[in-house]
Image 1 (tube, helix red, strand yellow):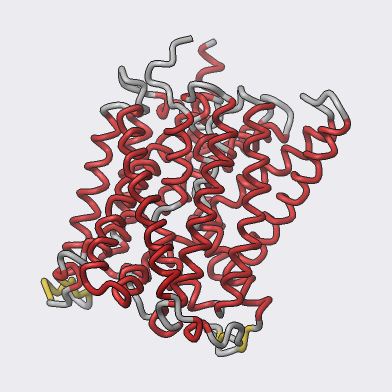
Image 2 (spheres, rainbow, N blue to C red):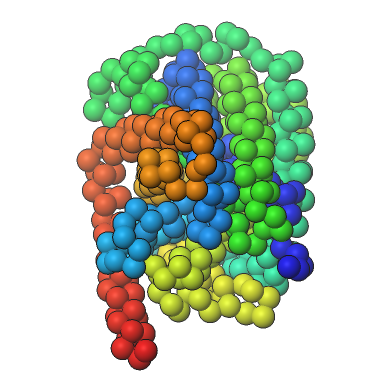
Length: 470
């Protein structure tokens, strides 16, 4: 079989690292400082890192045991029910819909962060000068320009991907190499400048929106969704499994990418707390730049901002590639609208890419009325909760395979995978419960998921029409 146009281990790993180490590394230190003390933040990172590790092991295992089920973790939903049944199709569709919505929101978190870091070089992007008034709505110059930058980045990436996934993948690889080198340098510099007095008190109560005191365990609970956002994308190699040169590279890229990302996240998120006080972190729109400027001054901030822009550009390419691949792969499995099967001569799912970016453009409108940090916090919650359902389904599917013995030859293999699947299931359920504790977030997430019913009816009509023609 020809490997031309296929993705090798290096590119697959860069997609995993690039998609994980995206907007989160730049904005999460601020988001976490709002809900957790330094001790709570570090504990949340450790628990999330472990939970994502076992989830990554599930992805890697399923990619090897079920190589025909390609396109992402949401695909496994249909396998929980009788093949070809309405329950199987509905489960597969709704899981894909939720996962896709998460991708759309995640794309905008990255793109808006890009605009935020670009303001280091162009301060006018934060200008509060009034551009126009429409009734009670006021449009500021900075927000209008931010909207324009985000739009250009979205559609510029669209045309890069249309030229071929292999080309786009190589751009993502170069951006990932640049970001890893840059972040490792940040870690080295921060180690020498770390001020332990800034993380004292290490553990202290936090106040929630209602004014109630939140202890250490409550802080970890609140930080669970936020820290998980950092690892969203660990399944990237699984999504592109059908485009891999070797199926064994999918599992290798998933674990290798996770280890690299975990090292960067824990290193930077811990060290940045020794460069800025908790109050400074909470009020920062660009926490990493503010942190490095305390050591190297404005020049250091600009260098890091440049690395950040390269990183975010690579992440934008990677995430939009992944987002358009998800409904396309689901359509090939018969659980999404057939229109998403359209592709060009280079194998790019053109219709899926177009619809993905049109919906993405709608999310970008949030930058007009919110600050970068507010927009980021909003989409992080919505996107992360959307991803949790496919993650949970993947873990349950592994347990199903273990219990039935399908694809297994020895009890030893089944025992090991049962433990991994059980831990991954418990972890996913814990984060779902923690993330939906707020009734407003829960209701909004459910509404987004239920909105897919409209399109599911179209899938039903297409399926019935196809059956009738046959």
